[in-house]
Length: 106
Image 1 (spheres, rainbow, N blue to C red):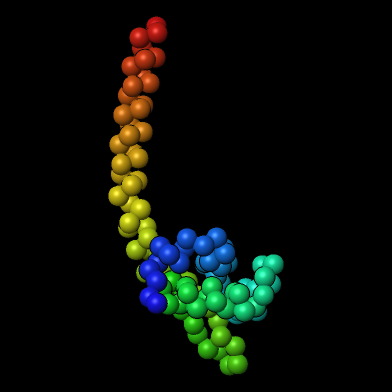
Image 2 (cartoon, rainbow, N blue to C red):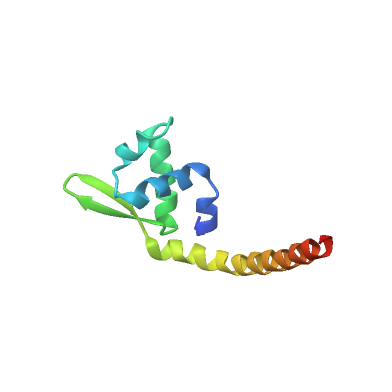
């Protein structure tokens, strides 16, 4: 089953994994040390993140390191941008209303 990036980031554990590996590449064992769950559970989350191309694997000797795929994160940001514009417009409108109300009080 092919998941999309929004299904991947819907899970809090996967979001926490993304936060961890955003700073530096990590092995599955190093990632698992940050959670109260099994190594197998972390591996499942990593597999989903890899399927969605949010993380990439890199073999270094006997270890596999996972790191964040910045391009995919930009897709999420691009999608959110449309909402930022809406929110900014609404906040600007609210500022105008509040300024008008403040003037009317004086």
